Length: 477
Ligand SMILES: Cc1cc2nc3c(=O)[nH]c(=O)nc-3n(C[C@H](O)[C@H](O)[C@H](O)COP(=O)(O)OP(=O)(O)OC[C@H]3O[C@@H](n4cnc5c(N)ncnc54)[C@H](O)[C@@H]3O)c2cc1C
View 1 (spheres, helix red, strand yellow):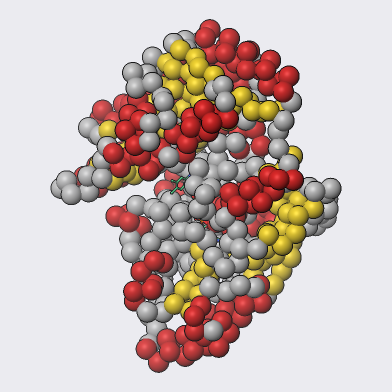
View 2 (cartoon, protein in one colour; view 1 turned 180 degrees about the vertical axis):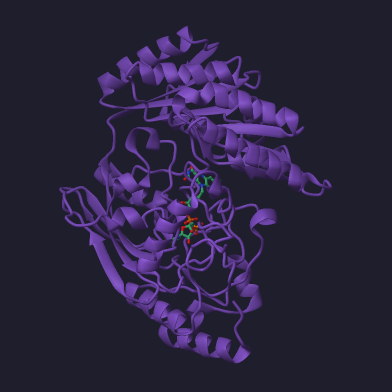
């Protein structure tokens, strides 16, 4: 989207009049922070918005939306910028609403078990705030120390504990949303039943392509009485995958069931030393939670099942500190990859749990076919794979090889009955790959929904819909 210098000045002055000059970033250096997110910049690129604004209230967001609409400019939303699909990048310029200052926990209701939060609240801060009262917020992306609840809602994020408790959309009761024209809408709320169309469900996961969430009413849960954490080692990823299926088939639902391969273990041990056995080909990190007696019984049963299905060693965290260290290893895994290679490309796919052994075999085949190192660290209980292709961007021709391998992995997962994204969203990283899953008719219907709420395609344009679709999301030819 091109805009003249005169127009830019008018827009920036109007934004400053609403927010004050301190909260409108429009200089080149200041905007550097907002040109990228955590996605692979070689794929998603570097894009500068016209301005990044930091409002504090819904009214301010609505005013900003009106100004953007008046000048026909894209309206973007950004939380903490930890997204891995380029969803929060300004590919067509425009005004970026950054929610960092919208970080108030507005209400906590322990009796009806909900909290009302602004979108910029950091995920872990909500649970930390609730902990003294014996409650927590269940969806826990591994990035939870940094990512915002608004970003979690935008991407319908998952996390290790979503196996038992469900991903973000299972925890959202109501939303306040600013539409691209500046209208403020409220969908759902804390009551058990919300009649009418479920527009809350529509907005969650829509990656800011329908509007900006300015407040969320989310479910909160009582902290479990007890947690039990086990680490099991295996001679192969396939054996570990079979042990995952056997555990769930037995009727036990762990609160988390995470798998890591040898490459990942070596990165974690070199990086932070979580105590994972370096000689294992695969480890399973299992957590059980609930009443103390149940956790004890289930821990024994899980240990039996894992042993019956090829676990070579089993260790139980005896203290909260030991459990935390094992978890810290898992949560730091992506960052630890820097120990092994300067770059990684993450393919966030999902397969039915029962297909995990096959999927692991296919990942190994792709690594061999493309002569690449692929590390695996993922939410095994959900079948949500995270093959991390390690590479050095300086190597000539490497990007093509990495992206080809990633496409083949996505196709394999679809063939196994899965999908191209388990939790990280589509953004601009996977919008073209979405054609592997949906037909033109499917996209046409999605586009009609978008047009109903955003007739001028101002809300995060260019995201989610494939690039060969015009501004209303319909096929060009
Ligand atoms: C090390 C690491 C580990 C990760 N682990 C996980 C994981 O376990 N599970 C997982 O699901 N993801 C994970 N992620 C990805 C990422 O952290 C999540 O997608 C997270 O929810 C993004 O939050 P954010 O605040 O950074 O959002 P951003 O990156 O700022 O934005 C993400 C998307 O949400 C939209 N958005 C932001 N705010 C709003 C709003 N107020 N209203 C509407 N839309 C909005 C943006 O436009 C964008 O499309 C990980 C990322 C990293 C770097």
